Length: 200
Image 1: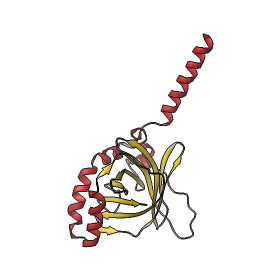
Image 2: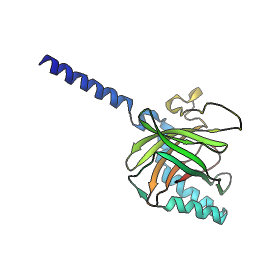
Image 3: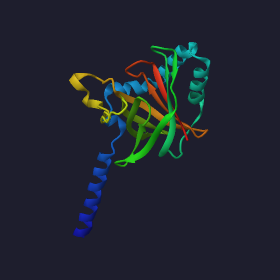
Image 4: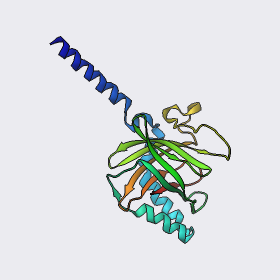
């Protein structure tokens, strides 16, 4: 009987440790970023209005990925082609070239990385409803540089700031046509709304 109680206690301890290790994204996100993600629909609507005067081909590409209906399940892990699209802010629209992105497992969680281009981003994906909340950091990669990518600062933003320019929060979802999109509301710099389109 004592052995069984000890075994049950050990299992309970493991479950508690497991839950602690895989806390929800709200436990890691700053209050400012929780609020920012809550404004995703607002940021998208505002950015689409601001993007109306952009290049017609860029506006069409942006609307294509944003209007693609989401699905709740599918294979995320692996290598993707990806491109960043910026709406509103300094310019109506910017659609960058295609580069390589990767979604892999790190420490029991999915991890997103944009591997090509000078503007890069990487961070953790947290399951949330039918999609994944992304907590990551952006950085500029210079040719030949071997710098270590920054990590999401979350509640540890420096000097009492509510956020750092590098911090990103977004929502990644698969679409019905086999693509995926990572929506980033109110980036700290440049634009009103960013979306990263992913396709196999």
